[in-house]
Every structure is written in structure tokens, then in C-alpha cells.
Amino acid sequence: MESCFSLPLLLSITFFISISLHYLFRKLKTHGHLNIPSVKNSPRNAPLPPGSTGWPFIGETFQYLSMARKGLPEKFIGDRRDKYSTKVFKTSLLGEPMAILCTAEGNKFVFSNENKLVHSWWPQSVEKIFPHSKNGLTTKEESKKLREFLPAFLKPDSLRKYVGVMDQLAKKHLSRYWDDREEVKVHCLMRKYTFTLGCKLLLNIDDRELIDRLEGPFSKITAGFISLPINVPGTKFNRAIRASRELHKDIKGMIKKRRIELSEKEVPIGEDILSQMVVENGQVMDEWDMANKILGLLTGAHDTASIALVSIIKFLAELPEIYDGVLREQMQIANEKGPEELLTWGDIKRMRYSWNVVNEVLRLSPPLQGTFREAITDFTYEGFLIPKGWKIHWNAYSTHKNPEYFPDPERFDPSRHEGDGPLPYSFVPFGGGPRMCPGMEYARLEILTFLHNLVTKFRWEKVFPDEKIIIDPIPLPARGLPIRLHPHKIQNS
Image (cartoon, one colour):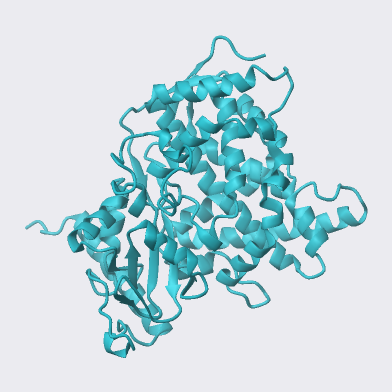
């Protein structure tokens, strides 16, 4: 008799048991218990938020991932928000009891109470992929130090000098990988472009061979973030840990070399962020700390920007009238430039319609759905207790596709971002409050300079009109978004 268990079912059962045991042992090891805090222990005696914590230890993680892989992450939140008719509900994700806030007011509450009621939290997998500093700081503490260090380098006044560099690199990239081709695969090329730009601006690396060698380990790190946190040789998670160590060693070597170059005045001070870091913090920050910061910056500058560009190119292929509006604006700027004249900060400021288009793409398809916080004390929100130790998840889709904030939310409408724009804290692709993404202005320049060069050279169409977008946990085209290129017959010269 044939077995009644199919192979997929057997694998699913094995997978479920493995993950259950993984989180069970992790909880027992970390906390010694698995109990959700009792409401009776709260001085306010408030009830917990409504909701379900799902399966023991696993919670509702599978339901969340299932909706995300179907390209419907907002459905997980929207269904529960509507079911409980509340602004906050409880669930369990990643083996943690969790509250999800569903409104712009909730976003504001989380962002404005940083280090008062909540602080940032990452799954243990992140701590394993990024090595701890030798000074004993955790990834969370390193991130806080990095945020204190970065503002001087990522302010508009500091970044404006890089507009020409970004323009040059965009032109080189298109010439090398797009010109004279009938089809290209967008996802892999956008990763290559954003990584090349990050290497140039952060490390002043132009060597194509070295950039290609560094790019491989970075791809493994990204794959590790979205894989099961099982550290066994051969798994994506294990490869990500080893890749992080390899890159850390490479970057430390670059720092040592840069120290020598700067001391011997072989490179100008301030040419890139690494040089500024060595000069201004070299006495108080060791090479391990600097390598950690550069590694974090490269990761941040690489992944989210590349996904944003992929989504922008996808939407412009699907919406010819929107593409035409972007083209008109960009051609007006291009036609006022000389043959070899590069973009300037003033040109970027004129790209208002294009930036509204980008923002509407980020509303409908944010590269980062959200992040996590941890309650550092018992507190109440909307009359419900959030116990100390619970995790709080803010998710862009809770407001981005909520008709309360964006009428007819699936309609692509750049005019939503004109004037004062959306209601505060309803549009949060870069977070908000004290933990607003410090790289927001960098991303704006990076995206707009590339968009200018792309639309003034090509029109394009999707090879697979119905190609699906899966979210795992970032939005990715199922086939890498291949497109057919149609160069403009008359180009700016």
C-alpha cells in the first residue's frame, strides 16, 4: 500500500517540529520559562490586547509569512484589525509575544517613546550574523553609536558634493550593463549598481574586480537574513555568518591601509566616509568598531535602495502615463545641460514630480515593511497592557494601504505626496521620530540620479506582464524582473 503521506506533507511536518523545538529550547535557554506575563502583575490591571497567539512557540509566524509570500502582507494586519475592531492586537511572531499597532497614532507612539517605553529589538539571528564588538557592545548598542556618528555625513549639506559622483556612476553602469542590450534582468543589476555606489562613497573603491569579490559575501548575508536561523554547515544562515566574518576581515584590512595612506597624505581627507571616520574618530574608535559601522552602512545602503529601484522600474513599466510624466520632467533638466555636464544639487531639487512618484512606489511597496521594538517597562496603549519584555512591531502596511489614510489605497496617485503630503506618521517607509532612517537623503539622491539617467535613455516593458512579487521579507520579483529595452531615438547629447 502506498503511504498516505506525500513528500511535501512529510517535509512540512518535519519543518514544523524542527522550528518548534528550535524556539522552545531557545526560550528555555534565554528565559527559563515560556509564560506570557500575567495581567494581575500589572499595577494598572489593564487587559492584554485582543488577538490570538496561534500555535505554541510558533505563534502565527507561518500565517504571516504565507500572506507575505502571496504579496499580501497587509492582509495579515488588516484582517485582524477588522476582526477585533481595535488599534492594536496581539499575536506571536518569531517565537515572541508581540503587539502590532495599526494606526498613524500608533506609529507616532512607538517612534516618540524610543528609550522611554521601548527600545529597538532584533531577532537573535541578526546578532549572530553581525559579530559583536570587542568592546562588548551588542548589535543594538552598536546601532545606537552608529546613529550618533552618522548625521554629519548624511546631512544634505554633506551629501550634495556626491551628486556628480552618483551621476557618473549611473552613466557608467548603464553603459556597461544596459546599452546595446535588448533585455536585462533588473533585480541583479540594481543590486550591482547600489553596491558599487556604496563601495565608492563609503570606501572610495573603484576596482571592479574587488567590488565583484566583495559583492558575493554581501549577497549571502542578505539571503541569511530571510532564512531559517539554523546554524548548520550548508544552510543559508551559516553561510551568512561566515560571509560576515570574511567581510569584517576585509574591511579591517582596508582600514589599516587607509590609516597609512592618510598619514602619508596619499589620499585627500574627506574623500569618502571611511577616511572621515579614520581622521575624526581614529583615536577613540578601533578598527573593529569602524569595520562594524562600515559593514552596517554597506548593508543598509545596498539592499533597501536596490529593492526600491526594482519596484520603481516595475511600476513605470506598468503605468505609461506616469512614466511620461517622469520623462518630461527629467528631459527638461537634461536638455538644459551641456554634453559633459553632470547633475547638481539644484537639479535634484527640481525633480518634484519624480520624487512624488518614488514616494507613491514606496507607499505601495516599501522595501522594509517595518522593524521591532521591545517594551522596557509595563505600559498601556489604548487601554490595553503591553507587558515588559513584549515585542512591538510597527509595519508600514498597517497605514500605507489603509483607506482611512489613503482613499482608494491600491490606486497609484503621486499627487498624494504634494504640498504637506499624507497625514503625519501614516507614510513611514523610512520610519519616523528619533529613529528616522539616517540614510533617507542618501537614498533620495541615489534613486533620483539613477532614474534621471534611465528614463532619458530608455523606455521598457516587462517580459512577464504577470510576474508576481513575493515578500520574503522584502519585496522581490519572482523572476528577477526581466525587461525589454527601447532606447529613445533622439537622446540628449
